[in-house]
Image 1 (cartoon, rainbow, N blue to C red):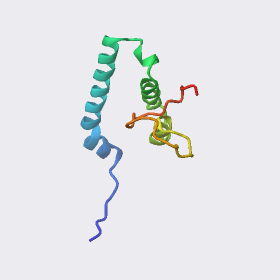
Image 2: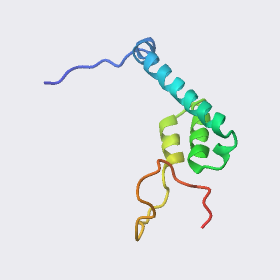
Image 3: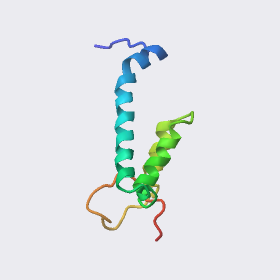
Length: 99
């Protein structure tokens, strides 16, 4: 059975999802505070943190944020690896790695 779904209004979207996303922002802020307490210089040393902070900065822009952030974190190569280069995924592509 098909349901006609009317998209939510801007107010409806905010009413529905604001608290959930407020919580996510607070979790991110807490994560960054913990990293800073341990070593404030660490984000500059870790490619995942560099990509994460760049993605956070891109949230303030307009346009297709999801696509932009996905591309920041994704491996742009199109050729498959001959062998795995690590045991598991790390969540971001190291654009700063020198080969």
